[in-house]
Length: 240
Image 1 (cartoon, one colour):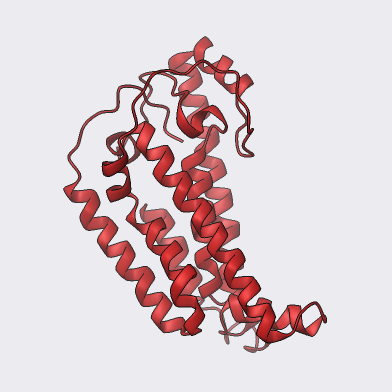
Image 2 (image 1 turned 45 degrees about the vertical axis):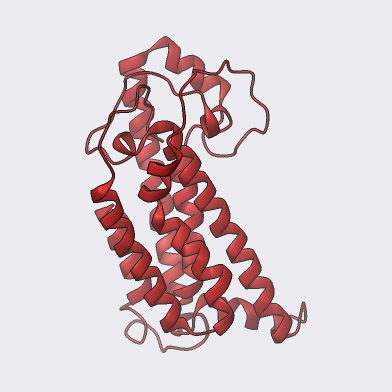
């Protein structure tokens, strides 16, 4: 979380703007949302009044996907496992989204940050998404090596049956029987939910400061909620 927060903070701050190059075009401090809408109108794909809502709707859909993946994945894995300091390897999770993709939580995080990047300056958004992608891929590879060493054949079979990043809509895996913890999951994933609410409802004001405040408030509430969520170990864990 600390590394993700640092990457996102730098994306919003973008201290290089005006230092490395003049703040014009892609290197300006306008939001990525506005910049993308301007590009759509500049290339004649849509008028600016239509392009901005298109970008907002697409961003809200990406944010919704991120929130669903985070809540769904955490419900089956358990908040205690998701928030644990160390890697966990008690068994293979093959329920919920883990039947379709091995890393729904990381994919959900990427979608959440991609939606939030619409509020960042364009260069800040690019910086954030590139570094976040590299960081998450490094985590995924590290966890796969750890789980392969700890679980051996059952996990190797899971690797061969379920894709790493791009979900497979159908799965032949037998269900493990784990029960979802929906309420605790929602409480521990208030941040992606808050990002979705911000993009879906507040972005229509075109007030970047308001949206940034809403994202910060969501992050603050998520920290408080995570601290208050009762800790309990999930019966099966394969943190993704």
